[in-house]
Length: 236
Image (cartoon, rainbow, N blue to C red; front, side, top):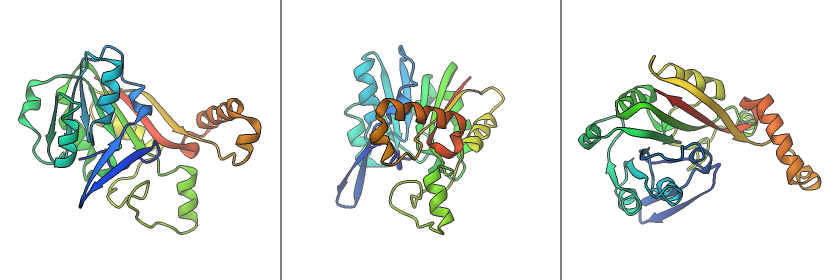
């Protein structure tokens, strides 16, 4: 499963005939990867841009990935130790059984799955003791999405919240509950959102420093309303 809809972060999609390569780096969730991480698995790795960025910061990092696309696998293998093709809800690569990861990353992947909880449970055995599970999800309750629904607009699109391949929808609170219900051995240690307060033209008048302060206050007060992206960290 490729990292399909990380559209709030900024991305580049390259199309070759009927094949799309998702060339995405999620800086928000990458900031949570601890320095000194040795082994990382990027589930739904796209072209491997997350790993490319991390390896510049941590040259000792061994990064592995999973995708459903042969084109993405080819691109990812140039920046990763190994990328495998697989359907996350079917059989996983047997090579994973020999590895224990410090970090397993799911960046904008779970919303594309039929049974995301079952998938996450299968991956826990690849996480070393005290290892971290990092998850990024879009928030269906973000104010812009609410406005669309109030106006009666729920038209599937190629990208974004209403991506035609989305099968699951999460809010900040349901995402927290979801991770907490995966396993008794897994505990949620951090949850945040990234987004903004709708200041409009006022943002340019008051300046970036004050705008960021207002955004921080709004996100802390109403994360489920002002947050467009949900970030979660769980630990064994």
